[in-house]
Length: 365
Image 1 (cartoon, helix red, strand yellow):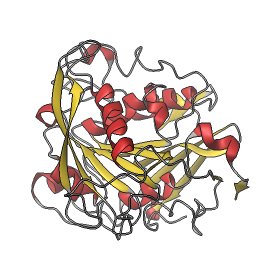
Image 2: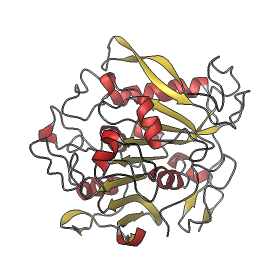
Image 3: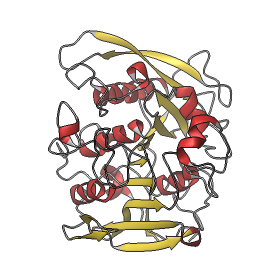
Image 4: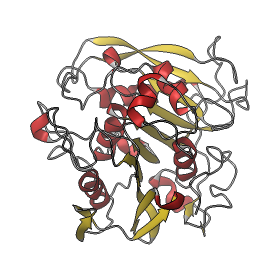
């Protein structure tokens, strides 16, 4: 199996599987949002430059003063100017102190060569950071999970979103947000699948409130949220084994993914993965000439419900063949021979919202 895959997302009416994928995919009909058929915002033009949209979102929850917050948005070239054809939606969350413009350029999710069909949205954290980092305000002041819900509500009311195919990806602190969403069955349950790259899942003792540890799993009963994570084995910012000293420590990657696997009903067996423990993966592959180890979990006879790529020699960064220079390439140890965005998009394309699974025509393998 090659790491270099095709472009992001099949068209809504197409089968959600590619020739390169021999794994189970789930099909479901499109579920158009309430905004279908409404007039597009005047500056939001399919295929044109991204714009920023401001919304009201509570600074904290509940009963909080509204705060003006923004998200950056790009419509694919094939988006109907009549706003009447449902498209997949992808929210991508930036790393700490990284702008929405930077994460857009870094992931390339607004490029038609990577993403020809999905609405690409980049929510903006307050001071360019999100809940889940030790330096960020806790949820009693800034409830970023609620902000994500507010962004989804706004997008679904303005645009023609396929609510069965909403996805989330994030880098570093933004990957932590996708982890929090995977822990939350209410807001996270609105996503068909989530992904993190070099994601930061901090220990409870590293934060002022428990989020990724004892706080993870609320309302997750009977909710399946597929999750993918990509992490370098020499990440010096968010260490693979969680030892970031003198900075606050994070969960070892296999341990947190084991938690998510268990929440998804992937079994409770525990084994050692590279000296670390986590829920047992059902499948392990060596890819990219031995530079990438891929672990996958099967849940309820569905393959790849949780997937992890451990990347040899990768630092703190988003794998990409593009050279960015500066601190982005310094931290990640330069470009790679494959693109994480293509791998993530290919995997996203296998999933629709679990509540729609009973409407699928069949399984494809």
